[in-house]
Each structure stands twice: as C-alpha cells, then as structure tokens.
Length: 108
Image (cartoon, rainbow, N blue to C red):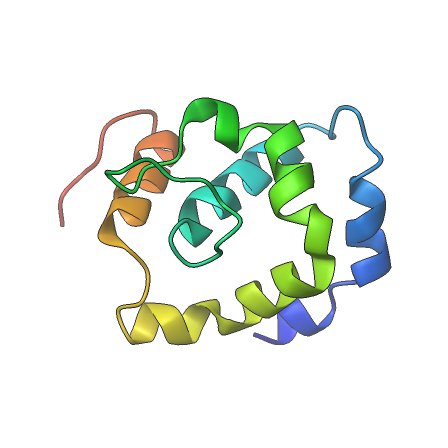
C-alpha cells in the first residue's frame, strides 16, 4: 500500500495528454479497467460483467480512469479491502488472468 502513496496525481493527470502511451503502460491501464469493473461506476460493463475490448483501450482509460485522477487513486487505495471482503467480481480476475498469461487460465 505504501507504493500507492508515492503516486503523483499530477503525473497521472499528465498521462491524459498522451495520444499513445509508452510500451506497457496501455496494458497496465487496460488491466486496471478490468479489475475495477463493477467497482468503479464509470467503467462500462456488459450484462455478464465483462468489459468490451473497445472499453479497455487507451482512449477509454483516459476517459474513465484519468478523467478523475483523485477517484482513481482512491479506488486503487481501497482495492485491497474490496478484494479482502469479496467486493471484486470474480469475472474480473478471470478476464485479467486470461490476458496476462496469454489466454489460458491455469487452475490452482
């Protein structure tokens, strides 16, 4: 959690001006969108709780996440508690895992 305290809201806000993010940054924001789906009300989800690919784009991240940097930081800081209390939809974990490990989810 201490890493979140080092986030500079001004630097995050400046990301919004980027037409194309540096390599990897877009992937991170896409994963954050998926993880916060159903948690952050500005993230558009389908009826099944999943986020469409177009709503995971850099443009979508700039609008939904970076449009309210203070809200994003608050969501990130409160995320562990939501995880601990079961407040993150299970579909989010599946979606982000599939993307992170190349489309195949390994069961524990």
